Amino acid sequence: MGTEASAAGVFSAAVRPVTLSVNGADRELRIAPWTTLLDGLREYLGLTGTKKGCDHGQCGACTVLVDGVRINSCLTLAVMHEGATIRTIEGIGAEGALHPLQQAFIDHDAFQCGYCTPGQICSATGLIAEGRARTPEEIRELMSGNLCRCGAYPNIVAAIEHAMRVAETAP
Amino acid sequence: MNRFEYARASDVAEAVRARAADASARFIAGGTNLIDLMKENVARPTRLIDINHLPLRGIEDTDAGGVRIGALATNTAVAYDARIEARYPLLSSAILAGASPQLRNAATTGGNLLQRTRCYYFYDTGTPCNKREPGTGCPAIAGVNRIHAILGASENCIATHPSDMCVALAALAATVRVTGPSGEREIAFADFHRLPGDTPERDTNLGEDELITAIDLPPEGFASNYSYLKLRDRLSYAFALVSVAAALTFDGDTIREARLALGGVAHKPWRDTAAEAALAGKPANRATFETAAAALLADARGYSGNAFKIELARRAIVRALSQAAAGTPQVQTDKRVR
Ligand SMILES: Cc1cc2nc3c(=O)[nH]c(=O)nc-3n(C[C@H](O)[C@H](O)[C@H](O)COP(=O)(O)OP(=O)(O)OC[C@H]3O[C@@H](n4cnc5c(N)ncnc54)[C@H](O)[C@@H]3O)c2cc1C
Ligand code: SF4
Ligand code: FES
Ligand code: FES
Image (cartoon, rainbow over all chains, first blue to last red):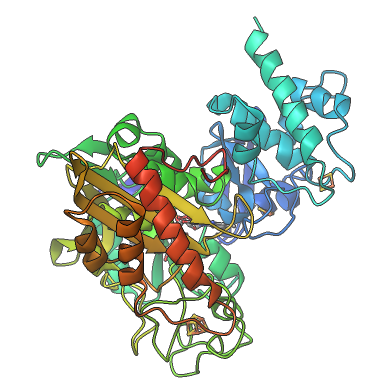
């Protein structure tokens, strides 16, 4: 077994460096293995845009994109993602240069308290990239992993439908 | 969450060795069930063996004319795989009826088989539970049991297996491929999950030190006449109260072969070969379907909170078989039941 393989196979509970590319920049976290990706982003990188709702995979508030794919960051460990590319709400748009989804959420009044919104927008970014939703029914079903306790669902679906059309007609 | 040691396995043999060396080590794949249980202190592994770097993500044709799904293929990858969609749409449909897109993106095929029950008491370390702590009792039997079993339960445990994917795999008669310290073996799907009996702590017949490497699907995929009907408390992102995987082939108007498996009703995906036999050779009509449903539910037993499931299951079986026969399978995006 080569050095690299045996290094990979060594069990340890120690705090270790984990490198992630987060919103376009390489970031090194020094974390214990039991730190979830969600806690790593919020507590170690100060990226508090990603929300902790239930911490059990039941609400979608913690949705981020890992290597372009939307997942719940509360049910995965940061150490499992060494070298991965992570996109959080902080990497979706910028002040003065909102992402079309962010603009659509404002235009359609697609939130009340806003707590679910970062997760909704990251999830919708994944949904649009997947390209499997066409109809409002399909948007509703494929956004069902994001709960909104304020019940802004009709406007959330309308905002995503609008942003999806903008994405389709974009040059 | 308890403190644990973590390492990444780089090949199957290394992963199996690490598991055999420490009885309280666990493999971690998507993590969507294990991390949840660790946060509740229901699972307290001393070591996590990260198997995500093992070469088990592929979906490929087998020499036998079927398809092999790698244990690490995600639920999303399987559900939308062109071959699975075309040849085994029942499997795609069942997977897409489960969890949410985010969870399906992380969840793996192997992990889905080994997900544990959603029994409230199992999750609550402040209560007794024979599955979590053998010998402490089963508070669900005289307690809150809306989501519990109506078939195959024992006086020790009335929990259900929560998977949707596994109900389709049971109906399709898949095979589970596993590797342990002494080599590879195959387990027929019907023999993979267990009934609770007097050992409810054991969900499956997988050895403590065995790794699931793949699922093999046989050539027959019932692609023309199938339905996966899932009934639950809300239309999406909820576990089944009752689900039915129905699949048929025909000789003219006569049913040649039938497959019928239920989810949400037992400690394992509940395939009933006697009910299937009651369908074979019969015309595909309501009377035939009612007879099969009655056969499947003959020994069903309800508890204080879940007796409604018996009638719900009867109707769901008839409906799913009707949908399968008509070639109008339940659509997982448009939830209207036709
Ligand atoms: C809110 C929520 C809703 C859900 N709804 C549904 C639903 O409606 N329907 C449904 O079917 N499922 C549902 N799920 C469950 C989900 O499908 C499972 O959590 C998932 O399939 C588990 O896969 P995983 O790869 O994440 O497993 P992990 O959590 O990584 O592992 C689970 C178990 O399997 C073991 N394991 C994993 N891979 C292997 C292997 N290759 N060999 C041996 N052992 C292995 C692990 O050691 C662990 O004990 C839901 C989950 C959540 C959190
Ligand atoms: S039904 Fe099974 S899992 Fe639930 S409390 Fe009883 S023994 Fe535990
Ligand atoms: S915080 Fe992750 S799903 Fe609720
Ligand atoms: S806007 Fe309040 S939870 Fe969605």
